[in-house]
Length: 247
Image 1 (spheres, rainbow, N blue to C red):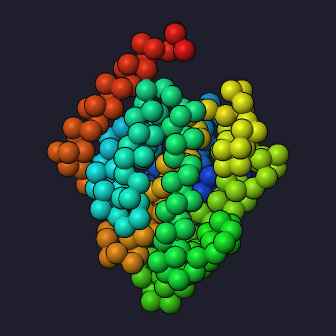
Image 2: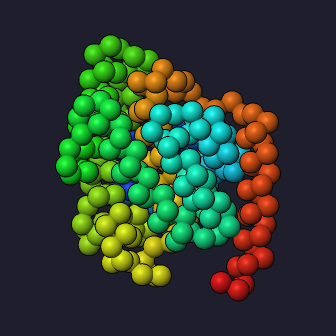
């Protein structure tokens, strides 16, 4: 397909990046929701992201990707708790639980590739460069498309997720420093948008880990186990509607 650099620019404006396991039609749906200035209201962004990460998709990725992907599978129970919290309506808990996993997986994967660093930003930059060199150098898959995806991921992680909390420019405040250091309070974060952004980071790290592991980069196909998990999460979502008036 070639470079996706124009999509990198468009998604960066709304504080996101090109995710894996999502088809081009779904991404075009997101971009189609932007206004003439390339922006989108918070509530609308949440609706758009929810439309490409329904329960069935999240369940399938969990069962078919996370459970078999090196480094990601080491955090399987933590990720599971975060997903459950999200569908129970506990978004502060879901995001706060998941953010440390991003750093944990990134560091383990970078160390595995021999490019680890003391500082997380440099670790991510080294990891992305290492993966791009392998993909482009060996012309793996649609390597130009993948190169754009990795660039998009790196920009979000280094310029948004791990930037100074006061410099985060988007309403959702999906910023590691602000969340984990307590700079953000009840009014500053907790929107479902943050969960979708962070779960897509886990998806991307799973995608990068698959380079070494020889696992499929294609979206999950769906399994009986995934369907069972989806049924449970639908029950969680129903319960969240019951608890909403009391929280």
